[in-house]
Amino acid sequence: MEAKEEKKASSQLIARLEDAIGHENVKTSKMERLLYSHDLAPLPNVTQVGFMNVPDVVVRPRSTEDVSKIVKIASEEGVPITPRGSSSWGLGGSMPCYGGILIDFAAAMNKITEIDPVNLTVTAGPGATWKAVYDACMEKGLLLCSYPSSFPSATLGGWISTGGIGMGSMKYGSAGDNIRDMEVVMSDGTILHTGTGKISNNMSGYDLNRLIVGSEGTLGLVCKVTLKLMPGPEIMKPIAYSFPNLQAAGAPILEIMRKRVDPLNISFADGKHFEMLRKIGKHAPEVGAMITITLEGAKEVVAYEEKVIEEIFIKAGAKRMDDAIAQHEWDERCYEFRVREIGLGNIPGEVIVPMDTFSTFTDRLYKLMDDLKMTGAIIGIIADRNTIMFMPYYLTDFDNLINLTSFGFNAKFNDLAYEFGGRPMGFGAFFAPNLDRVRGPGAKYIRQIKTTLDPKDIINPGKMVGMSIRGNIKISPVLYELGMGAMGVAKKMLPRDHLVEDKMEAYALERAQKERAEAVHQHPKDDKKH
Image (cartoon, rainbow, N blue to C red; front, side):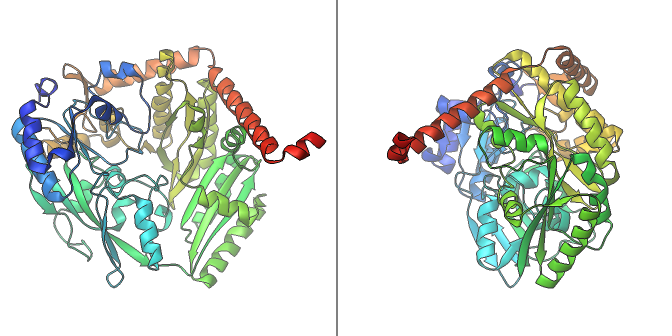
């Protein structure tokens, strides 16, 4: 472990990989390797001072057997492995920390191998996107129960590894609740099944499905997944309501969650989110906040649930939005970060807090964003009947190194969640020191599990169980908290960065000019008349 930084992929190792899985599936060009050096969050070059985030070699396996061969070679050579899907997460979970081998699962291991309408299951590779699986199942009249909001690009293996909460989690549970079985390659190359095929995995003994789910790729490499399905709904209907502000939605949502109604999904977004969308020329309503609820099932059941929800929201002063707006918001559920089009960095945060804190937590979150002079918005979903996931995001310009202090927001945001009886979601490379605070004494046992199953620490090292940077310098939780806290203090003291607003206005102006030019080009005679 101490020599990990020095143990780069040698020419001998690359030759062994080429012999094992084919020359065409092993990539060493600098340009290709650079493409795999970050995930959803673009990182400034200065991060390479701390991390070896550019892999030495990229491999594209075609099968579980290929993955097993790669892992055996890496284990023998002592070279770290980083698994990667489409990297739609933002915490550095699929970014190398020590160079080494990066396994691209999305390139070839992305096929749907079986949809079984009799046993209500679907089996696919870890690199298959959730949308591809969702659409294929719906074509056969079957419903994939839950999936991430980034489902057009997010892969099965990625969301499962983060133990994600997403669309449908309100009704059918999170990533781990819908898994029948997985084929996983362990750190010595062993291939094992974590479940029992197409039937329930409930039994005495340790649940290997649950061991892998949420492990962020640090215990084994998911190579095939079998998910349970539901019969397709007779109707799927989104409805939407506007509120004067986001805080006003807290009490009626809590009331709905205490009724015998079972929405597929409940999403919320504040007026700032829609305002920024309008500034960049997107279709967005002018509201203080909007709640979108998607119902599905038999027509009679959906009609009953709609009636109950309508009564509660109208009584609370909400306004029913046109059904076309509700449908638009549901269709746009995977594009919550469209404002990135203007070319600025977008850093999301994710925490979960108890349902009864919705309004007061929102108040405090706005105050935090204002104190740190952030340009951003609040979006989120209801995770279950007593859990809300807040996903605020903010825009910043990482070309200016001083704006790295913006990461201090995440630390203070996490502190706020703890204060309200909640916790942050995910660790990755950037928030690995949070493990001790989130799990308390349990962190020791999590590290023991990692050491037992991956004694050479080659499977996605530098994530979840601890942070270390170049030179194998360990970043303790105390040092991490001090550093992140200092960035938060610095961000509060610095003047507001007006570049974000300026760039947004410039983008809107440029877009308007382009639209006018296109209109003139399409109707030149009309233009001359006027």
